[in-house]
Amino acid sequence: MSESSNKRGIALVLSGPSGVGKDAVREPLLAACPGLRQSISATTRPMRPGERDGVDYHFLTKEDFEAAIRREEFLEYTLYNGNYYGTPAPFAKKELDEGKDLLFKIEVQGALNVKRFFPDAVLVFLVPPSMEVLWKRMTGRGTEDPETQKARFRTAYRELEFASQYDYIVTNGDLNETVEHVRAIYLAEKARIDRSMALVKTLLQEEIQ
Amino acid sequence: MSESSNKRGIALVLSGPSGVGKDAVREPLLAACPGLRQSISATTRPMRPGERDGVDYHFLTKEDFEAAIRREEFLEYTLYNGNYYGTPAPFAKKELDEGKDLLFKIEVQGALNVKRFFPDAVLVFLVPPSMEVLWKRMTGRGTEDPETQKARFRTAYRELEFASQYDYIVTNGDLNETVEHVRAIYLAEKARIDRSMALVKTLLQEEIQ
Image (cartoon, rainbow over all chains, first blue to last red):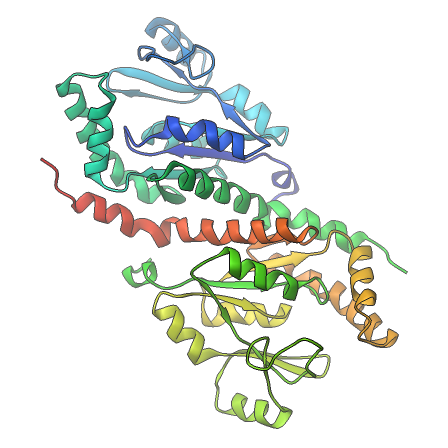
């Protein structure tokens, strides 16, 4: 590991299959982790009730999104169920280079793209306690028609196959436990030897007596 | 990773330079981590005030210890400042194979030996906030003569050089924070992909509708 990697911030990627509850984890996780900031994604999907533009996502038209793709402004983007999702790369890179830790809450295939840009990104894959619970969560939301629900559920199955490419798996059953576990991963990653050897070098340079 | 590795317990090794405070961390850490059990070491060093045989260590005579070495009963052993320290290997192996997580609180070179027996052991290296703090802790203990204190302090400097062979570094300043950080490492390691892919396999086998 190079010296500079000691100072680079952590790119913590929170992902998992459609409907697993990534959105619900995000805010309490950020509240529990001072020093971890949200990296805001862009999307062309319709805004859901309660969502705010520029806070939950940058909500873009398809035309604006594709123009941004051509300007190569995205860290990652993916087309998912007919909608674009993406994260502005230059903003994230600058923050990480300054040593800030960033949380990326993105879809499964987009999450894997992050490692192409930031090989030391930490990928966390949320899974439901059971597929039955996942189905109940999806249908309980009540904002989509039955066919869309079934399509999302089939997508979730396919997305589970990507889990092996992630670094960590956390079961999202009880929200408090999920937050605690993802926070533990964040704290542990900060203590990993390649990010913390600078501490030891400082001690060895100290002269006593 | 083989299927069996999913079920094997975690060997969590708590180490760090002489005087850094490994003993103080051990009990609150075990209290904070249900499922993590103490692996009891053996030693030939004199019992200190407040220590109990079979709880803090198995206190052995040098003759008994060397006989156990010849019977190859030690997971690790090392000669440190004229005293033997070691951990009975067969006991630890059996517990880990049964899926139990074990905490090993051992000296720096002994800790590195653990990886030879259990390559997936998780090595945590405690460091003091500063060498000045370490010196104050050592001399504040008041149970050793000045020459022994100085020798231990020089040893601590040399032991810091081994940090790069560990997996994690945790600064032992505030005890509560130290316990929280080591616990985070333990939780994170349990969520690592090579230990948790079984969760996903179970989900994929679930049949819904």
